[in-house]
Length: 117
Length: 117
Image 1: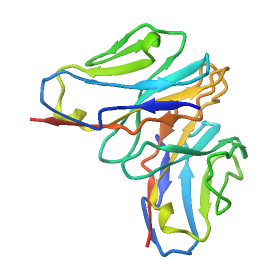
Image 2: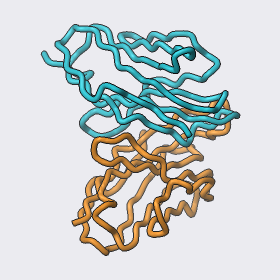
Image 3: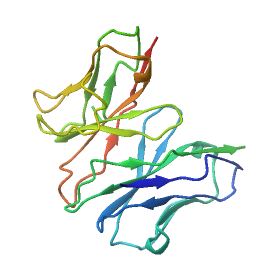
């Protein structure tokens, strides 16, 4: 069975601080995909990143960066110089299977990030 | 439209009633998904359509839940004899072919908040 654990339920920071959201996953699949989604108060889940299990390169996109470490089954997400607009619930998710299937996502419980001015 | 559209945004119904939730996916997306998000939890998979057929309905909790996608575009999630435990946000998502390694990730709508009183 697949499982995603986001141990941090809530995080509160002051604007311009850096913040890291943790994600640990469990799967028996050798091929799998990892995702991060952002859910602002409007409710829509916004796709941020997808990583496949064969690509352990870290990725940076503007103020966002992701650290994928297979050895520790972790896929952590860092926001540098946080802004109030970053306030949202962030979900880590996992899908498994060969051939690129990504329809059956297993989500963690989410981390509520509050960035205070 | 540009994104996944779900209607209604809110639905309040009495226990035992029948409800229908509608999803209009992104144009050109062949795959459509329903997820359910309970308060404080991550979304949970319900059903996946590839075209008009339900390719995987293993997430439907029981036979009171049913979904259709008769023309391969709009989908309707139907819940019979609603129970208070059905109260949740029902999220719809769409994507390009999920069995392609270069498929797009899931794009979610804003959801329908269902409250059963």
